[in-house]
Image (cartoon, rainbow, N blue to C red):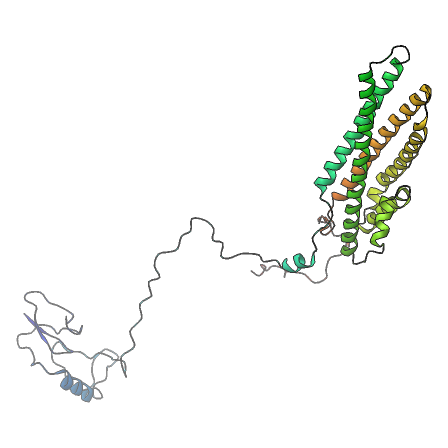
Length: 349
C-alpha cells in the first residue's frame, strides 16, 4: 500500500497499515489509492497551490464554490503568512534544589553602627572592681585580726595583775600587736589610694556621659581624699557629687550618710586611742587597749560601709545606663477619628 505526502510528495510504502503523518516533513499523508498522483517537487507544488488559492474559498458547509476539484485525498490547509514562528526555547535546567544542613548565615543579618561609639568611648583608667574588692576584704580582715590581738593582749594584762607572765608570751603579745597594727595602717592607706583613683576615673566618666566637664581639679580631688582630717570633710562631698551626676542620689544618699557619720566617729576614737597610747601606768595601758579595740572595730565597720557604697555605684555602669522598657496602656482615653482599616474589608497584605 502506497501513501503520498501532501507536502513533500514523498511516496511511502506503508504495507498493509494506513499512516497519517509523513516521517520526513511531518506532513499529512494522502489516502491510499490504486492510481496515486505523480510526485511533484516542493517548489512546483507550492507555486500551484499559491496560484489556485484565490480560486478556492471554503463555504459555510465546508464545500468549495469553485468548480475546480482537488484530487482524492487532498485538502486545503490554512498556513500562517510570512516566515515560520520562532521555536520555543526550552526552560534552562538549574539543577537540583539547594539544600542546607543548617540555616544559611549569608542573609538576614543585622548590622549596628557600634564602631563610632567604641571609638569615642575612652578606656577606663581606674582600678578594677576586683582589685578594690580584694583590697577591702584584706583591710577588713586585718582590722578584725588587730582587734582580736588587742583583746588577747587585754586578757593578758588582766592575768598579769596576779601572775607574772612568761617573757616570751609578753614579747609575742607586744610585738604581734605592733606588727598587726602596722599592717592595718598600711592596708588602710592602700585602700584610700585605690578608692581615690576609682573616684577620679568614675567622676570623669560620669561627667562625660552627661555632657559636662569635671569642675574639680585633679590635685583637689587627691588632696581632698588623701590628706588626713581634710578627707573627712571633702571625700563624702565628692562622692555625693558623683551620685548626683549619675542620678543615683536618692538610692545612695542613706549609705553615704551612714558611712560619713561612722567615719567621723572612727576618726575621733582613733585620735583618742593614739593620744592615750603614751601612758605608762597599768590602768592607763589597759584603758588604751580597750579604746584601741573599739577603734579597730569601728574602722572595720567603716570599711564595710565603704564597700557597700562602692558596690552601689558599680551595680550600674556609667557609659550605658540600664533602661527598662515596659508596655504602658494608652491613658488618653480617646480613639483616633480616622479608622486604620475600612469596615468590612480585609487588611492589606
